[in-house]
Image (cartoon, rainbow, N blue to C red):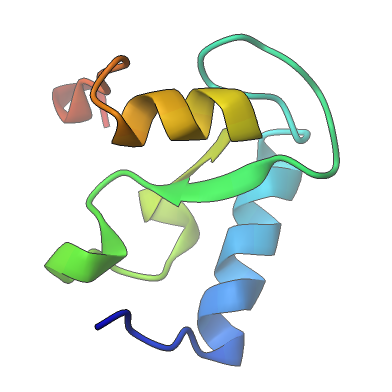
Length: 76
């Protein structure tokens, strides 16, 4: 079951994307439709704060969740 995201959570995702200037972490594509992705997944109790959000374009976001891209969380 997916967890419902609060307005604070949605605000953190938006702020994270703004901090990244809407640029995808992997491919550098800039688009306001890019996603705010949790470094430590929300489903694994990752915080809903800008410290835990990076910006991913939809294509890279799908590739990440399919296991084709990796994020080295030690960098954060």
